[in-house]
Length: 102
Image 1: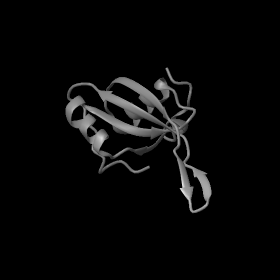
Image 2: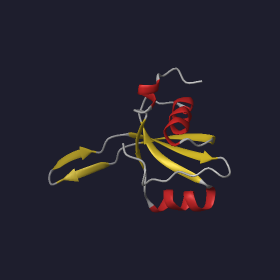
Image 3: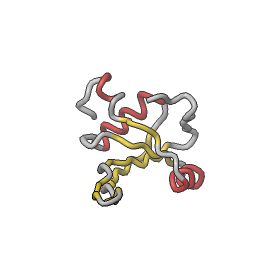
Image 4: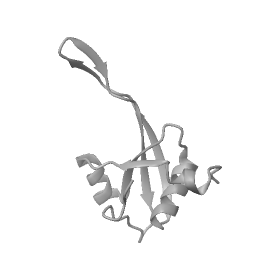
């Protein structure tokens, strides 16, 4: 079980990821993808999703994404590192992103 309080759980989810890959995961695998806090673990993400959207979570996979190095003219820069969570929902559960507001 998550050690975070109710208010802290709602801060775990930063934003849904809407890309071609995440849309394909939703259609074929019944998964949704969210950017989450760097300090979040699987239990925190599962509890936050279940409370925020009133759905049942089957599995949570977390991935650390390294920020890319980018060049801005002569200067070198780096995008921020982030953490992504792939959440598989149980059969019959669905999240409507029109209702979600971070």
